[in-house]
Length: 459
Image (cartoon, rainbow, N blue to C red):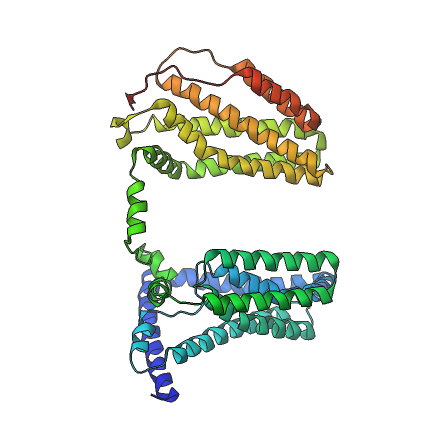
């Protein structure tokens, strides 16, 4: 068939799909339709539009400064867009090649023509949306028309290549995408640090050559896999999902590798992981709230009074340990099917600690951020972040194992004074980083927590 007939068939297919989507949207909209809410929302939108339009006039100098800085960074935009395509290629093929297009390509229609139609539609919609958004920004803000036009041209040209790169890289191995993304980030960082436009151009050309070589060398699309994932993406309509509370997900193929991985999930050694993952989902909001509060205590308070850091960091660590211990204790208060399964108490507790320890990276990063803002060196900030993470993990392990003894109703001596000494040494590290030696000596002399408990019991 010639291209005109293929284009007509493709248009019929797209029109049929669009009509089905609009029918679903219409039914969902009528389910949620409330004329009063829509009337109030429209009135408030008009009022906020005029308020913001008048309010933005006072920020003309700010937008002028912003425009000058954006013009300086505009040469970095193409490579940044292409690096974003490398990262997006991990989960999205960019072109919505669904099972309908796959079946259409089995007929006397060229698959290359279908991909060209999809590319033209995808690029056209994205460019139109970018043009509308940038034009609206130019009308509502004091940005100049020349800047808007220049930005649209650079971004539009970059976008045309982005769709192509993302589609070609979707079927390449994951390490190729990761290497290209890392290389693009290094080129952008080097160009920004050195301030050399020529170096940025050369680096971009070299990166584009490497990306093109990888695309053509590794490009072997798995059409069935692409069609399955895009079917779920095309029909995963947000409004319909909210009404029906059903999300369309791509099917899982039960290959030998997947079956082996699924069966290994039920091994006894993975039982404890399943227990704490299930319990963690129930306590998710509680844990996130405590983490957020700890990070705010670490970062916000020392910005006002810098010497308070030796109090806020141990306080945040103490809050994290107490909240984690309470979440661990709450597991034994609620009815669960795992109560009737024989388990090893110590291993159960240590598995919980294993799942909680990665969260300490958040506190370590918060300490490094605030120490950097206060002017501390990178070496001292790393020492302090490592010290707070190690001590918090150590104290969490001891508290959880003591809580396990409480659940077993066994007698023991709480390590209250030892915990206090550990927090004092941690505060000393926040003030004077070389005092981390005292904390290391404390770790070595305090001894490990061991449970003299029965090896088997029923929760």
